Length: 394
Image 1 (cartoon, helix red, strand yellow):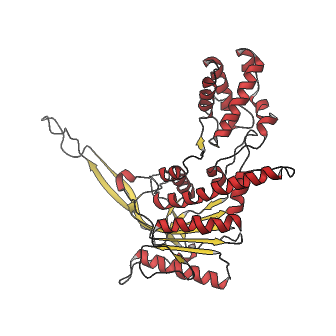
Image 2: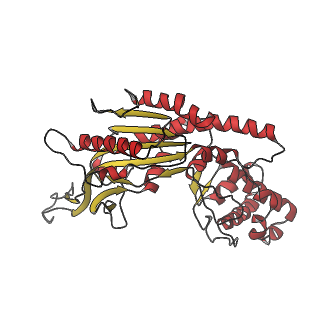
Image 3: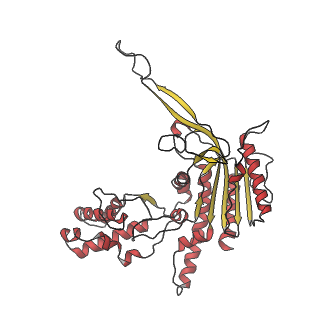
């Protein structure tokens, strides 16, 4: 089963996601330059949003971090290990970010890792056991991190958090299992042609002029690039893969354990999907927001639940850029193009849909065979009540 989310969101002047030069990210699509927000930016803004955290309250979430050594040290000190031994353990934890087990000069891992609380706890237990067996500080220092990473107790599967199950992870260390993402996130692209603009600004020294020697003029000058765009966002969730990630491998002779794990995973999955959609609606990337405050909400959301794993993006609705014309504004033209393209593809390719949910702030723009949701709460309720019920239990 797939749950696919299509969203149109128009932003006022902004620089939500910039490149290494400070310019808003862009791309060529349909032979025309468009504004762009990277999928990594979208995923992080959703995953780290207060909305997602609030909706997932009571369920552990992961951290993407290099600070594993600090977390391990904190646990070991709380368990009664001496500061000195905990420092050695933290140094060894810094080697868990690479296959070679090379300890770092600073208390950080070599790579950024997406870690669950269970991962951190497992590393702390491994190091605590190693310290106990070593017996002394000098003996503990000589233990190879590479050998610790190959410990069979550490190499086994551990429960992961919903955000890791959604977005996946890849870590070059045998101490952690890689996870294939169940959620695919497209780069958001503008439905309209993009034009870069520049804001030339000056800063005035508040105390300038207090003495006769002060120079006249600005204290500093600068410029910042920005644009305004209506973005098409697309997300595709493989429900089966999501559940498999949450459950993990279960021996065939432990059917009862599997059923219990599946039941728990269904509850978490239902909650996580609602949290993801709500966070995607209410969360905007933080780039240059103190300067632009481009906090606009989506004007159209289409959620489709499909029985087959055949993901379909409607980005090609905007190969010819949307535009304002006559009494039709840019957003309305974008919505009309999305509706027309979606209905055409579903008819031409006979795409099967179990459930279709539609929300828009524009009157009179409807999607065929869709449940029309008057409010976002209605949409979220339908996703929780019907979408996940069909996807998880079907």
